[in-house]
Image (tube, rainbow, N blue to C red; front, side):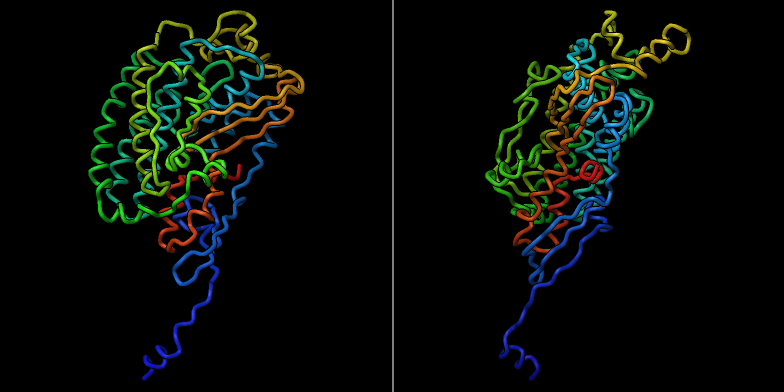
Length: 404
């Protein structure tokens, strides 16, 4: 009798607003999503950020340009190499500084290693978020090999602070390039194994295909960048459009999707790792261990720190380091530049205004994760609550660079 009464009255539903986060484990940090639901269907989504705000940009306007470098490690902390080198390239553009060819090659290798490492972590957590736990171990095992490379390259594994204005913190050890080559040569085997687990897996495909869709037009209008833009069918990569570090010399493809859904974003990142491996192989062929890492003319030496081993053994080099730390490099007063790189998550930009001193008058970071989160209200519209987890994971946001 009760069931009949319900049937006769009809089902009455009303919209409900719930919080997802900022402590939810699937939001990849302190991201708060306010979801409006009709049953289990998302009819509205508003992302709230700011829970991790540290005021890095204002701090950077009160530190010397060299002192800002460690702060970039704490933005996208999954690819600190890219952040360090991007800031150094921006400062070098502002002061008109040219690095050596050897430095250029080493920076390319460092940036692409960071891209692979970042994508491997994304792959592990994306799969884990929707229940594919085995992939986590495959991806993290491979990623550990890259962290071993970072440790040997920089002395630390995570917050590397490897970039330096005018160069890099240190040269590579003897035969280090061979170790890099051996690691990247074996990574495709791991990617093949993961693809056998995921790419045609019925559960994985159904959880990602036609989920979190954003059109080409909306992606462009919202200024998406990186894999999230390319998955919507836009062939845009800053390494091709505005080459830096000599990327125009390397042969690599820009993977482009068709549907702009979670599945395409997965396929794009898988192919990007393979393309990064090819770039690293080409760059290592240009690497000359006997060439100088730093420019050797007297004017250039006013910009960068001397090698640490010389500072510890020579009074002149100690004085040189003190002068660079306290006075250089000076930026042209009120000259302003914008420089961007293709970071693992998209366009990482730096807007700098010179002050006539070694402290920037203004310094702003254009972080891709912050901009990419704008797309969530469109992506989530009409999807199920369970799809929210897959969609957020597919964007690969890092809240350290969202809030800064």
